[in-house]
Image (cartoon, one colour):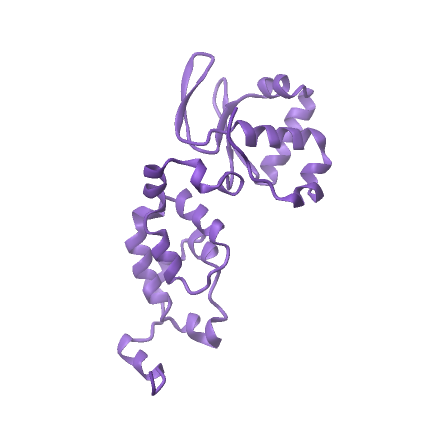
Amino acid sequence: MEGHILINKKIIKSWVFEKPHVFKTWLWMLCTASTNKRVVYWHGQQINVEAGQLVSGRNHIMSALSLSQYEAVQALKELVEDKAISIKSHSNYSIITINNFLEYQGVSSVIDAPERAKYTAGFDAFWNAYPRKQGKAKVMEYWRRDRLSNKSKEIMDALSLFVRSDDWLRDGGKFIPFASTWLNQKRYLDAEYLNVKKEENMLTDLPEAI
């Protein structure tokens, strides 16, 4: 097993660290999750997984981590409730997805260059244009997760309207949301309902001397 994971030192103060069976399960998942899109074999069956996913089952987790059935079930339940993971169950296996996987792995090592270019195309243009620059890693996670490269023109067109809207211009941009919120809530779909300052009137807002 090769590679690395990124874990914030604050984890030792988290609820996960306080429960050994949960922490053990969480760390094992981070270390065994796939770092790219590939095919894995589970009892002779071919299963497609994405980056941040692993194929497992309750009995497999119990055996691999020497946990009781109660500990394994509780660990999975609590990690799901905390939204650290999501689970899609099938007849004889489950696909476990680590949410926000890029935060623990880093974009550069999760996917190869062609895949990274595919899923992050248009992101730099969006990030440079968005007026409130906070939480870039989270914003990129949403961009990649929702395949927003396919909607980059729609998003940029909407953003060009939002930056001229009354709400965003009010009080020096005080009401501009975080970019992660704007993308996650798909607010770019609301562009048609904006009260937008006309472009020709924007000149009146410029200082006399430039």
